[in-house]
Image (cartoon, rainbow, N blue to C red; front, side):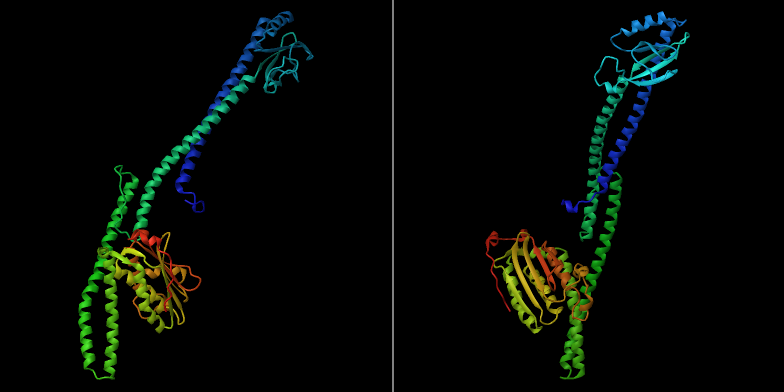
Length: 472
């Protein structure tokens, strides 16, 4: 797929949404766990400080300084520094300890790591949580704990959340991609069937799986609908063919009677002219019915039994030679540029009819003085036949519609015809697995028919040099 053709699909958005939902759930879970864990750790730290302060006060219930100093001296010699202690005079002067408080008041304080203490690594991340309380003798006792372990726990948990979020995102994207691909395969299968039916393959059906899930339910209903459509189209086609076939016989008898009446009428009489006009109308009706029957036979695939190895260059040359006088009578210039020795497997009569219809379409629907050019050459995509003219051209919006039966442009409705010529061209191209389209031309109209390389019946055509033949 080209980047220019890329567009975000529903399944891609679904996978992204699933990843975001999983990531959001992981974030909510982390927020809850993080909040609960940090709250528990902080409460535990507060209780430890409160118990330590209560233990120191209980060691000297009267608030005598010697006992408190003895405890502080004993605790202060602890190298582990699990606790921090300070004793202040009533005026706030530090009597013993290794930190000071910015304001002497009862309650909790959070202060930076003391500059007077032994330096530690990552000192900026160390802070003291301190609880101060007055003693009975007027002094103040403060006990603190380093919050570094709490900070480390928070950072550890944040890193753990980062890795878990990444893992969750990867798993969510992988899971969403797997699910979306599976769902996309099912929808692509359904879409391919609808596209094929839209292109005319009414026999295509949705393949159902043993799972009998929602997609199978939809596929079953689609198959039932397609069965009904195929039956209706077959009935409609059969009715049209029956009408065309059944009317050909009485119309042929009518034509014979008109011919007999024309022979019996006097030369130059108005009756003879009227009969001649009636014969022309009957011939047009018979031609329409004949074209309908032939299109039906082609669409049934029966002409494939008549496929044989043929020289497509010779077919094109013969058609051009036969139509040059017709073009000259209409004041047109018909030329050709045909690569020789292009051999294919196909139906000679049908390929002849296809080229005749396209060239006659250019002759009939372009003004006098139009130049018409027929070319045939082997290219990378296959055998390419082009019929281009310098006429008024075909509007872009009508370029596909003109290949439908009975479709005629407004400007051509005054011309003789039944609107089946290009429909027959399309049917012949389809039976040869070829493509026919009206492409952009510098001026006028350009019909381009591409026969696939699989129609080639002789590899020597690949090495044939290109030559040009101009015919008038």
